[in-house]
Image (cartoon, rainbow, N blue to C red; front, side, top):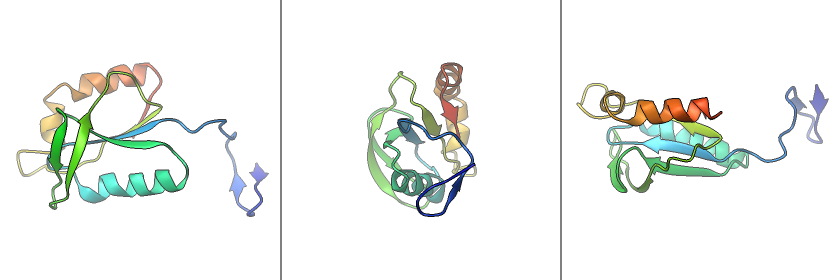
Amino acid sequence: MTVNGSGLCAMMTPLTALPETVVIVFDGFDDLDAVAPVEILTAAGFPVRILGAGARGRVRSAHGLDITVDSLEPDPPGLAVVPGGGWWQGTGVREQCRGSLPALLASWHAAGTVIG
């Protein structure tokens, strides 16, 4: 365990560079499940991008947040966050489980991506 200058203890080995991080959003995603990780990870210095599970364009959250996103890229990031949401609406994570996203996440995981 090490203690940094602010008196906080760190039990992990410091990284030389923080991993590229993607937050994957889709119609019906839960706002807090996506926005909170973006806020926390960017405050910690992680490079974060918000990408859409589908084609490039507009995505609308379960509570009305409307954002424009680029589509996913096949190259695996170091960390991927997949929010929940939309279970009851015919959109959201349930629909994503029926598409190509699970296979992409499995290939990223096999390449070393941490999925959260």
